[in-house]
Image (cartoon, rainbow over all chains, first blue to last red; front, side, top):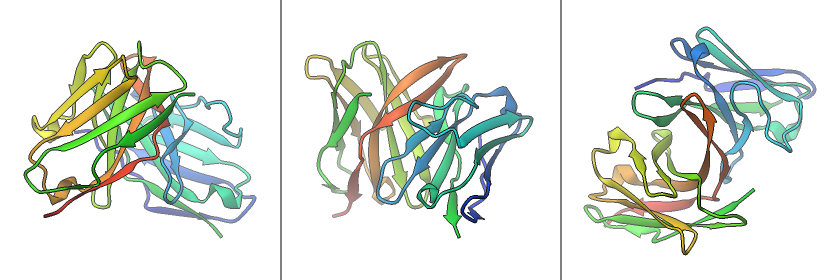
Length: 108
Length: 121
C-alpha cells in the first residue's frame, strides 16, 4: 500500500512558521488533504486538494505539493495550533484513503 | 455542515462482531458518501471503508473480508459491522462524511466525535 511519511514532531516558537512534510513516491501526482487533531478530539480538515481551505480555517494554514513531498505550512503560529497533523491521499489501487504517520506540532 | 454521532457497545468480546451506527443530522444522508475510520495507538488513522447512500461499498483490503457496511436512508443512518474481532481492533472509531473532489479523490470534511471500542473478554 501507499506509505506517507511524516516527521514525528515539529517544534516552533509563537509567531514563527511551522512546516510539516508528507513524503511519498510521486505524491505530487495526487491530491493531498491535511487534518488537525487536538487531544481528545476528532480530526478537523484544514487543507484539501493540496491548497484549498475549508470555510472557517484561517489563511495562516496553507499547502503545497510537488515531486515526492507535500507540505502544510502554518504561518504566525499560535498556541492554539498545537496539535497532531495528518496528511491523507486517496490510493487509486484500493480506492481507499491512506493517512500519514502524523506529526505533533509543539508551540514553544 | 452535517453533524455525525457514533453509537454502539464500548466493549466487545474477542471473536465476536463489533457493530456501530452513525446518525447524521443537519442534512440528508442521500447522494453522499460516508466513511468509517479508526484510530489506534499502534496504527494511527486507518480508513475502514466507504459507503454511498445508494448502498455501494468499498472496503479496505487489509481487513480481509471482515467488514460489512450498510445504510438506512429512512433513519439517516449508516452502520459498520466488523466480525471476528481481536485485541488489534481496539480503537476509537469515527464516522465521517466523504466528498468527491474529482480525479478519483475523496476527502472527509466533517467527522463524528468518535467512540472507543475495546476488545476484551
